[in-house]
Image (cartoon, rainbow, N blue to C red; front, side, top):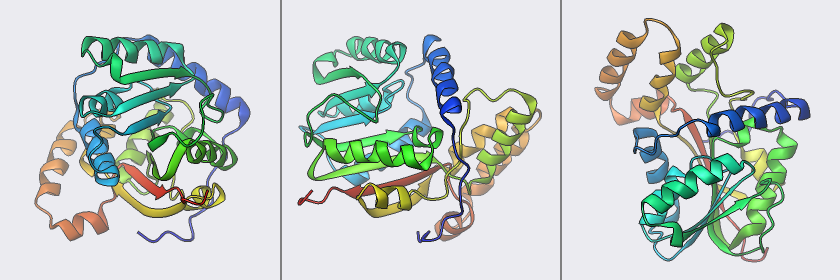
Amino acid sequence: MDREQPPKEKSVSKQQEEAQKHVWDRLWSAPISYAWDSLSDTVYRALLDIAGPVAGKQVLEAGSGTGKISLRLSMDGAFVTLVDYSPQALEQSRLAFRQKNRDGQAEWVQADIREVPLPGGGYDLCWSAGVLEHFSLEEQVRILQEMRRLTKPGGQVAVLVPYSRCLPYRLGKSYAEAAGTWRYGTEIPIDSLREAFRQAEIEVELETDIGFVQSLDFLDFIPGAEVVKQWAASWYKTLEEKERREAFPGYLLLTAGTVNPSD
C-alpha cells in the first residue's frame, strides 16, 4: 500500500498518556482469558509471514499486555522477552506461561518501552501490537528508536495499530465513546506509520492492513447490531480477494521493516 501522504493525526498529551496507564492498570487487574481467538491468530500469522519460522529466535514484545501471542511464539520454539510497564500485566502473563510449562522460554521486564534496560542488538524480531496508537508522533518515534536499538542488524521491527480507514472499527469506537462505554482510553486510529519509521531510521518494507472480519466485533458496542454483524461477515466471505483488499480495509495496520546491518 502506498500512503506517502498520510493525513495529520491528533496529538496525545502527556496528561492523556498518564491517564492511559490507569486504564491499563484497571484492565490488567481483571481476570484475562488466554483462550486462542481469531484476532490473536491473525496477528500471530502476520508475524510469522514477516519473521519466518521462529524456533531458536530471540523475540521481544514491546508493551506485551496479556502476552498471549508471545506465549504462542514460545510454544513454536522462540525465546521471548515481554516488556511492559504494568506489573499486573507481567504477572498475568507469567502465570499463563507457567501453566503451559513455557516459563523457561521467556523473561519479563517491567519498563517503559521508550527506555528498556536491556543491551542493544539482541533480538531477531521486536514487535508491538495495540500500543503506538496511545502515543504522540514524537513518542512513537522514541519507541521505534528503542525497538531498533534492541534489534539485531538484519532483524525486523513490526508494529500493529488500529487502522483509521477501517469503517466497522471506527463506527463501534465512535458509538462507544459517545455512550461512555469505551474501555480503552485515548486511542488515535492511525493512517500510516511510515513517517514515524522514517524518523526512527527504519526503512519500511511492508505496510498493509489485516483483520476486516475481526473489526466487526466493534459493532458489539452498538445495541442491536448483532444481525448486521453476522450478515456482514457472511457477505464479506462471498467477495473476491481483490475486492476485499481494495474496498474493505482491516482493523489493524501492519508496518514492518528490517534494521540496517550498518546501524
